[in-house]
Structures are given as structure tokens and as C-alpha cells.
Image (cartoon, rainbow, N blue to C red; front, top):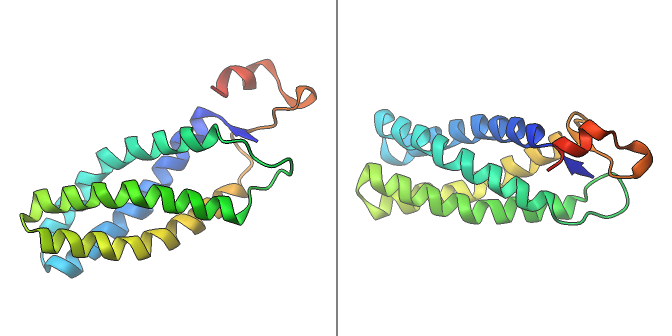
Length: 150
């Protein structure tokens, strides 16, 4: 089942809210400085919103099985692939704001664990939401849905 661009945008925003809170908390624990933690977390809002949208659009092009539910395995693989890009981005931003590769590495390493779990549950929750899903079978697709599914 395909998703509209609007669904990808809203899904990306909802993920970014949860992920930013997680990044700020982890950065605060590692650095001990709430100001640095805010800079790291808010810095990621811009880069990761764009990265997440692109990630969603790539995964939207991957053929799914004939059943209407996405498998837990696919949710897990999406989480792992996202985490690879997300961890690299976190490291670069944390290094930029802290100036120390050790702190940046710690933040990025902790995020691997917390974000994999958060992403998996976020993905599973969104699978239950029908809004923005497009059934591509001819009898179930309207002209408007075909236009918005690009």
C-alpha cells in the first residue's frame, strides 16, 4: 500500500518531535549542559526532518507483500536503515556543538539503542493509522489519490 506525500510529511513531523526530545535528554545526560543539549537537539530538527522525509519516500517505493499490513520485519529494517543515517547526522551535529569527538560518540552510541526502539514503535503506531494510505488496486483508487501518491 502506498502513502501520500502528506502522510509522509505528518509522519516525519511526529517522529521528529519524539526523536528531538530523546536527543535533548541524551545530550544533557552526556554533556551535563542543558544549553548544549538544546543546541544539539534543535540543530537536528532541520537536518533530520529532510533526511526522514527522503527516507520515507525511498521506503515507499519498495514493493510490499500482498497483505495490507506491513510486516514487523520491514518495520525493523526501516528502523535500522534510518538509524544508520540518523547516527551519522547526530555525531556530526554533536561534534559541531561540543567540539569533542568523545561526547559526540557517546551521544550517537546511546541514540542507537533508544532510537531503534522508539522508531520501531513509532512505525507500528503509524501502521494503524489509515489516513494517507492509498490502496493501489484499480477499483479502490480515485483520481485525486493517484495525483497525491507521487
